Image (tube, rainbow, N blue to C red; front, side, top):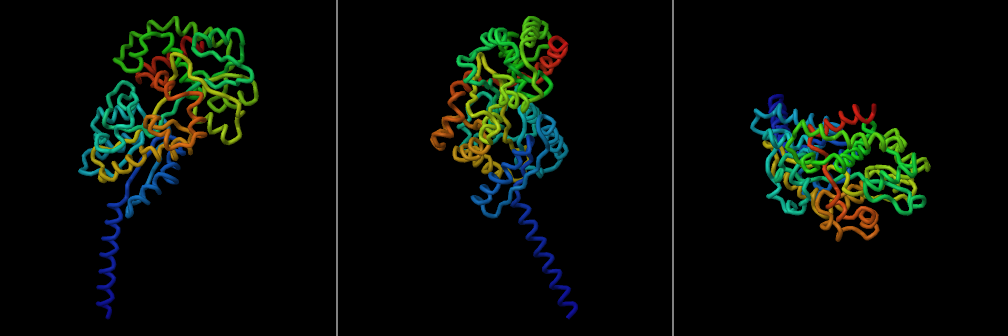
Length: 380
């Protein structure tokens, strides 16, 4: 009898081990850089939707933190597995800078031509990431964008270009506010937009090649920015700019569009405030979906990204839930959105505005040069 029980237990162990292996083969492992809400998006919405459409699969996601640091952690994880035949990460969500580095280092596989939604993202940032050709290797999860928020009850005819903004702030000192170069990326984006407008060589700043001598020609742009700053109010951060606008302490300033609309939806921001994207433009950035070069579940990863970049999911998940601009081209999402949602996101800053004036951030080394030059020649 004891022998029979032992055999039964051994058989059960084999079955359980086999079941565990089968389940492990049906786990799609996603690792996301970015903010916590990007992890929540997969946990609460996208993952369950994929599981519903693909019975037997479970989506597991781990977040590594926002910005390039979070994506650097993902990159290091892939490098550490480079000698293995199969990697335990199937989908990654990464920044522009790190996506370019991963492509260059052979850590990602080309897949965009194999998914039905691959042709729906044609914006330049779907092909080039801060000067690196990433075409075929990435699909944008969403686009975040900076713009100028303003109070139309006070500013009936807002400045529509950086030239007009310079004149306006001279006439209305203290009414424009931004957070400089250290206290949040909306201020960094405004500074970048200024350099695109006045430093020259804008295409080279965005697309390369890098030339360290280029910064020698920035003195006039930086001197004018320092003079401009004498007429502005400095805010304590991205949220601080919105807070000060809501209290009427400033009437205009650069903001992240998704943050602006989320605050309005939550009742934290004056619903009358509006947005504009000034000439010649301001930067934004996508986060990318990518598939590691030796992902163990590459076929399922392609299905996951195809679902994530479909018009229905981009409309419901990206636009409605988070007020992000879609990763795919906006026209593919319009028919799946109700008019109120479309109008809210695309009336002030239209798809045509985004196409013409939505810029990427500069090439990494130029970006470092701009921030250093601001500290040396504008802050001091």
